[in-house]
Length: 130
Image 1 (cartoon, one colour):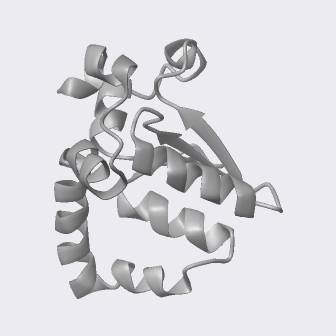
Image 2 (cartoon, rainbow, N blue to C red):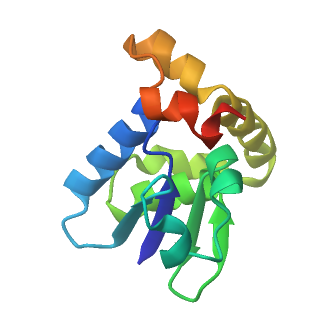
């Protein structure tokens, strides 16, 4: 089981989680929106501001993984996008992780450009304006 702590205010992030949810026929993923009302009480060990900057995941043994490690594992668990595992190869990993950090920082602007959907109203007022 992989618990993913994602930004539900980001249209791209929410769309990816909806796709993962629909493909997760074996219930290997648990998806948690960091903007949920009771998030901090339910997951006091996850800093929602940091999880907003970089995708966080938690393995069954309690270990926290971040960024592309979460994304690649999630797609592996649902049996899709097997090519993504290349992003975890040693040399490629370095460049892929740097690219992910750029994407994560500017995901709202990228989402608006790609989807035509601007940031949602709650997000404009919330902590993700960092």
